[in-house]
Image 1: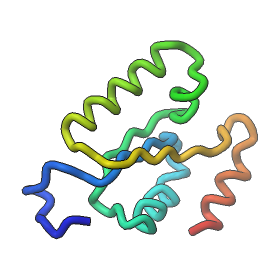
Image 2 (image 1 turned 60 degrees about the vertical axis):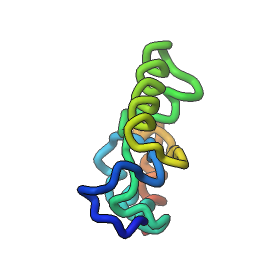
Image 3 (image 1 turned 135 degrees about the vertical axis):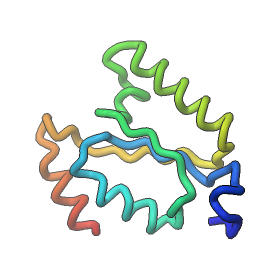
Image 4 (image 1 turned 180 degrees about the vertical axis):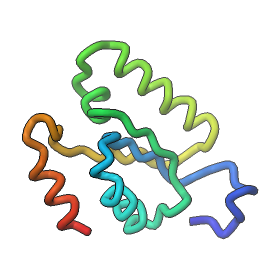
Amino acid sequence: MSQTPLIDRSTCTALVITCSDFRFKTAERAFAEQLGLVDDYDLIARPGASRAIVAPRMPAARETLLGEIDLLWSAHHFERILLAHGEPVLAGGREVLRRAYEWL
């Protein structure tokens, strides 16, 4: 991470795209910290975020997500996009939650 004070910075290293489920937030922060991204990433959190990119249920889901990515890149010129993916909680993803917390 840059040593420049946050208020003076206009760029970040990465964009993290993740599920908005509140149960993943602790693991999400730990993931960013392990990668050295504390205060150095933009975040898009949506239900089933990775699905919206690779297999959207409706075209608008993908289009709006790509629009957000474009907007954030225009503002902060990140170098990487990290897609955090897990099994949907509604589709048996409780095991993914357990593994996420074990990872911590």
